[in-house]
Amino acid sequence: MATIRPFAGLRPPQAIVEQVASRPYDVLNSEEARREAAGNEKSLYHIIKPEIDFPIGTDEHDPRVYAKATENFVKFQANGWLVPDERAYYYIYAQTMNGKTQYGLVVGAYVPDYLNGVIKKHELTRRDKEEDRMKHVRATNANMEPVFFAYPDNAVLDEIVRTYAAKSPVYDFVAPDGFGHTFWLVDDAADMQRITQEFAAMPALYIADGHHRSAAAALVGAEKAKQNPNHRGDEEYNYFMAVCFPAGQLTIIDYNRVVKDLNGLTDEAFLAALSTDFVVETVGTDKPYKPDRLHNFGLYLSGVWYSLTAKEGTYDDNDPIGVLDVTISSDRILDKLLGIKDLRSDKRIDFVGGIRGLEELQRRVDSGEMRVALALYPVSMKQLMNIADTGNIMPPKTTWFEPKLRSGLVVHKI
Image 1 (cartoon, rainbow, N blue to C red):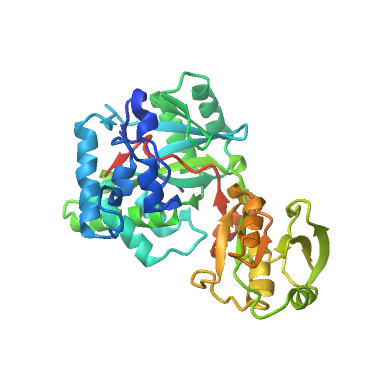
Image 2: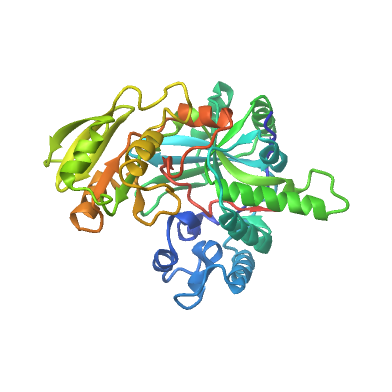
């Protein structure tokens, strides 16, 4: 059963929340963060990407960079840019994209739940990325950014959220990317107790986005427990900050592939080879082809879009991994025809989140940077939860969630 609790967060005053709030640390590089924070000393990038305060080219893993994160975090508190709440709350965080709003509960998630599998994963993590975030948590003694969880749909929680969403929010703004962000405090003790109880009845929570942040927060929490001779189990380091959304509100969008060459094949030979495992249909040059069902793919090659439909026998609908279109495309196209064995390390392949549109795939091929593009039908939340429930791991670069959580609306000190 899932253990959560409210916490007393640090939050920016309403008047400056838009200056403080930032995109997550891992969706942009150092130079992009430097540009977005230009002229804004209140930007959270100064804490979550503090290499921007050093000369261009400074290694983001330099020990001085982590020390700068600590220094800037102290500065933000001293200047009143992050102010502690007087008591513990749950928070409600709503995001609006393309007219659709999803409502999440900001909670303290329980470190042992991560370690014992109540908080379920669907991706492998890399130790170097875990260690980077662990150093950041150790330096700041805080979860500066939330992780993104899903939970099974729950009518009681829906009703509580609706009640608060009808009230005036503490934050309500549209970020530069056009997505709306709205925030409320759950301040009624009875409501907080009901939220805790409803989560306690859930068999599992699911990491949607933020596997490395989750791992880092949990591992540092476990470290602190081991280092504390008077450890009780109720200390703040036993919890880390998560925004939990009902699974039914979440949308996973496509995560597409572009490849630099055809592994020595001509266009004609490549298309002929594809026809062994796929029904190949020419769509044309007018506009991109967006896959409209499971096991259907869009292919862009030499100015022409094609529809590929996997033939019977090329997938296993009874296998949580074998049913995935990323598995079919990896096995039957990228590996078998193009010789790409490892999606994590092969430099011939790149990945494009669907938020950029299929036109981005077309642009990268037309520019000559890439030779061929592959558009995939998105994974469903049901598939993700099934994979996590069965203890399986998704292939790399399978899920892309939008909108991304905005960092800086609330911080959790440990």
